[in-house]
Every structure is written in C-alpha cells, then in structure tokens.
Picture 1 (cartoon, helix red, strand yellow):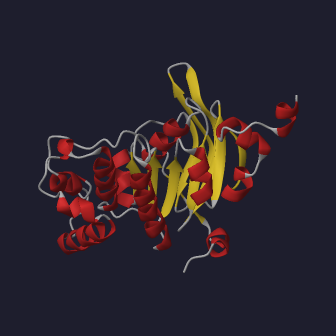
Picture 2 (cartoon, rainbow, N blue to C red; picture 1 turned 30 degrees about the horizontal axis):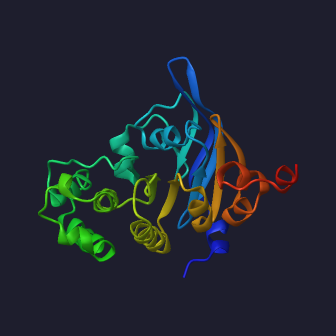
Picture 3 (cartoon, rainbow, N blue to C red; picture 1 turned 45 degrees about the vertical axis):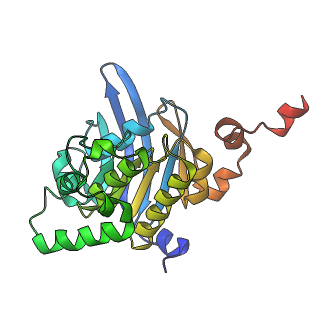
Length: 254
C-alpha cells in the first residue's frame, strides 16, 4: 500500500514553474510553482477568482500559458496541444462536468477513449470504471442529460479514466452534490490514487479538500500564498479564518 512518505520521495510527475496566464490585459495566474507526485492527492484551495480553475485549464491545454513551464514526466509541455496532453496521460474533469447531455452514458464514456486504438485495453478499462462506478454501468444506455448531478459527475470521472491518465485534474467535483454522493466520489478518488494515479484537485469545500489531501496549495489573487501538508493547512489559523469559516481567537476576543 502506498504511503505518504514513499510518494514524497518520488520525483514529481507534474511540475509547474513560474506559470503565468493572461486573459487580454488581465493576468489571472501570476507566476505560480507547484508539483504533484505519482499516487499523490494534491489540492488547490482559495476564494472564487483566485485562479484555481484557470490553472487546471492551462495544465490541460484548454487555456494557453503566457509564460512559464509545465513539466510532465520531465518534459515541458506548455506549448503542446490539449489532445496530445490527453494522449500522454493528462486528463481534465472540468468544472460543471462538461458531459454531452444528448449522448448516452456509453457514448460519453467512449469520447474519453477517442485518442486510443487499443480495443482490448479500452474494454478492460470499461470494466475498471464499472467496478469503481457501478451506477454508471446501470445507466449505460440512458441519455446523460437525464441523470442526476451525482451520476453526471461519475460519468465525467469515468470518461476521464477511459483516457487512461497518469494525472487527473479534478475541478470542483463536489459542487451542488449531496453529502452522500460526495462521499462516494471521494472514495473513488482515493481508490485511483492508491493505484498510483496522481490527482490535482480544485475543491470549493476547503475543509474536505484539506482533510483528504497529502499536500495543498492556497491561491490568492493568482498567486500561491501558502503550501504544506493537508494537515498543516487544515490547522493553520489564517487558513481556518479565511477558508474554513472559523474566526481567529484574537478576533473573537476583540
């Protein structure tokens, strides 16, 4: 079984160096550094507009980087098109799920494997997805737009897994979902990290994100302002005050 120590001793599979992203004249990401190792769950937390989603979209190639390096397995992929990043093992589950509502669940899953040609491997990965997400198998022939929010999120994760990623970029997987559904989704996330996949998670529920993450980064105004283990940040007074809805002792006394 993978341990935090063994994960931390390995080289990063994904490393970002001085990444900057601009929309028009506005710089949304202002020179951040971060890294993710194999089998590691790392979170990005911060307020709305901090640059978290922009960071994930840039890593996936959906949004271009203005400057900086995105090192995947030691190679700078900052100029690589998104479909080639996917083919090499970098998959994004976008905010809002991004499924094709008029297609069936099976058709949605197949879009995740569109860069692959290994028929037998795809069939084996379908079986893995069904083991992880049995509800997806139950809904296989159903139109995706008729699913519940939680079922749609499971389809979005299953679709990403069909690309056989080594790094999974997850943007707000718990958004709008019931607690029991969120619990199931995070069980799936833990299962895939135990198998050696790396996960970079953006999550609105900062408390949950820090509880489940080995390491985390706090973003504010397009910059990384804090980093540490999930446990350290969960117990950091500034983080608790700003993101976990708890006031500092001095403020309460005042």
